[in-house]
Image (cartoon, rainbow, N blue to C red; front, top):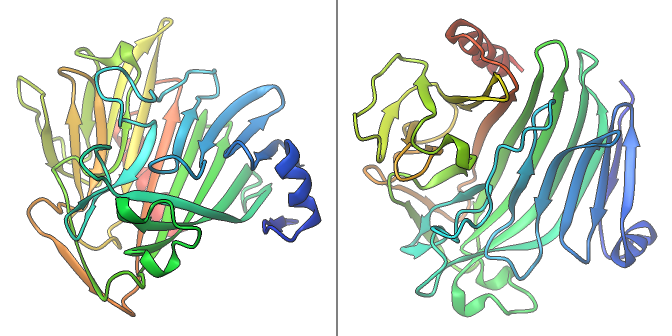
Length: 319
């Protein structure tokens, strides 16, 4: 399989062009465009936009701002009026008591440092794929404006996002993999959070109050659905759109530390998140203790069965 990976650094002539505008890279079916000055990365197939990643340095955190099904359904909401800190698909928790989720009262900042690499390719099955990696420093509010945030970082994160298109299954999948280590700003960190803190997405407004949540264990949900927490391998949510179902499924790897939990809501709005159960079981790490997280999000412009999603989970784990 031929693969081209282009490292991104301030000394590369190619990135110098990117700083002035957009630079596109592509092989096969997908193209990847970087607008470094604007802090935007976009993945498309022909004229169809599939993903937009926002990573400007003045943001509270980098996140997936837009994500689409193969039929053009946009499955994320960014900064809705009722919760301005809900940003598309985002990852945030509390570190040493610093709140990286809500954006108030001296919040933490996930500072974008640089893109490390990006590429387009085909996977082993010949499916179109695009990937990029990013270095992120997790810092306290008082350190957000530092020119060099490395000495103040509580956590160092290398985030890798891989988008794959499977036409046979009508699937757009997004793998979110993150490698962490304790930064120089702390010799030890304790990870905590609310029941919804982790990797979460604000669902389309049409899903509010009426979408259907389901999970790998067949566990039931409360009548109110104002914040259920479920132990499962995966959780999915679906709702009819233009005469067909739109489904989003979220999978958690058993290799992740902590206990995989899924937070789901329909009222007052629809939300889906996967967590490590940090609300009840905090995790502690010291300098020299690396840890990783691995999640998969899949989007389908049609309904998929429980059996299909169970098999999809197993297929993902075998890779």
